[in-house]
Image 1 (spheres, rainbow, N blue to C red):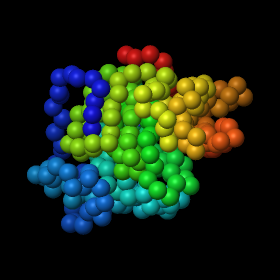
Image 2: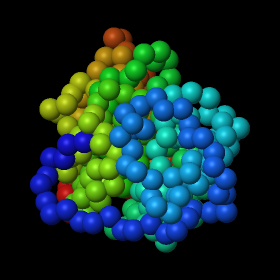
Image 3: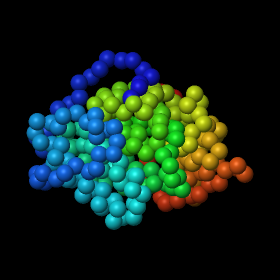
Length: 264
Ligand code: SAH
């Protein structure tokens, strides 16, 4: 992982003794990526084993709910979501719920994250190329993306969360994740064109620079305000950039934090 800001390193908070009631030794999911091979030694509490069982159960539920892309399910089975939330919330880390990550922001629900990743990968048989994520937050989705695409550029406008994501992601040693501190409404032209763009915050409209920075053949997945008829509502929007132009599909209703301009 590379970070485009240098700052003092904060210590990660310690972990509570265990995640939940499941304590049987279950083999971890198949090791298919560098994350597994570079995973730090399990916490002395045995948390690693506990978390793989509860994570597998989350993945099974997502599959039952209709997530079928094996690459997405494998990534969700590998990335330890409990490492991205505060220690007081660790017991809820594998529930299908969004959780506070500080500064008024939230880590997205696994169900929504997996749905968006599935849409991003739809129709791609080989590994997805470069992807831009707007809204790094705690870094969870960036870690998932690192498993399903070749390079991840993830941008966050809140310095505190950019720093938190960097600290959260450091132990995973994801060499293909690049964290950026800046206003994602401007995209990140230096990394363009992107095979995929995914936003974790919803604005009134899609910034045109996102569409400009999308490669032909690329896909954007983002929440957008549903419109004047439904104030305060958002819908998931998929935009495909085809040689003939842009093709937009409006999907289901979603609820994301607002996309804001500028940095703070
Ligand atoms: N993918 C994140 C979700 C974080 S919530 C995760 O896995 O945790 C969405 C994030 O988008 C928030 O951290 C918010 O600060 C950020 N955000 C909102 N507007 C933004 C903008 N213009 N540029 C970059 N980040 C933005």
